[in-house]
Image (cartoon, rainbow, N blue to C red; front, side, top):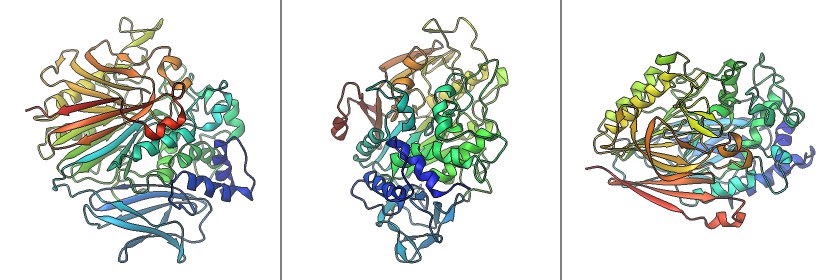
Length: 543
């Protein structure tokens, strides 16, 4: 079993030092306070909540093991007992249901009558039948990164943006008081087997020295894998979030790197769909660090990755809904866990998931329905696990030669989903995606024989929070994101390889998207604190 000291030492990689037993917990507390603004996080290391209209689910960790189960109080008349999510009594979850819609709750954490942190507030979403006038979402992608790898960067350069700078970007996004936050995949970068990515990440000599090796035949927790797992995962999440999001409902999606792999396909290895060990790693990260998706009355409880017996009642681990009254419904889905390799009939999304998505797009009970996939429509970087057949050759994208191991059925499913969005009456067919390490905006008028010109698909790249020099597509693959050759894509904002995020504001008549960008090579870090949008797009509902 791994001691609390192992976890604290893992977090210490942020500063490139190893803390002693004596300095560890105290130093962890100081870092937690720094990651939480003026809020006194006390013994909290991190806390990430999600909500629906009648339920709150919180994942939290503490700077030292608790002597007994903590209690979450939601005002004077409602409390729930914490459930340990890992050995060691320092990771806990809190599941409170039967709550009132649109209600601000005063929350507090105690153990044996002792306060663990300063009280805070959290508001449930409006009832699904309510008619709120506004909704605001903060959205970004690729927030992960372990500071230990920056030791291998050239002077003045980064492998991944340091946690301190990422946290500053996150704080700026939160300063706009979003009603919810969507982190679209790649919270972890510690690839283990992918031939191109793993030598610089989890399979590197530095990673093996720092965290150790994994035994894929053993469980993640309660085995020799627990120590390397905590050292690899914790420092990529805990110092970034701390208690900054304590009052902001979060929705964490997963993509390829969250399975501890890059999507790569060679004659030696095809990394996806995920094997049992990859799935266990992704599930364990979610169980310890960030909440699953709470149930929604319009999302079937039997979708893949839903209603597992070792998870809170009715939650989904892969497919989520952000329902904000009748104003907005955001459909979040990862393409990795259910993808198939069946040629013309292959899919990224299980047929039951596709049916759910198309049913929600056809429904008329919500003003705005937005797709939030992990895999971006519109652009290609020539990588294997994309919607598109584009191949990178000699620094250019094209479809003149077949992409090895790419499945034509993936593009067919892409066209079916975009067609369903295009056909939504009176709605903007908006897709906000992650993965591509860029900020961009485009309008898809055609995909193959599918014509969307009457109501073009709006494709938005939300911007990466943590990408740095080695992670940009132009560096890692030799080419930046470009329109796929199978599309007629009008680029309103050509993909920019900058860090950033978007703020999306929903009203009954329109969706307004503000784009924020930061480039550490051109801008001082202090500029983040007053960052303003460099572009604003107003998407009015079609009449």
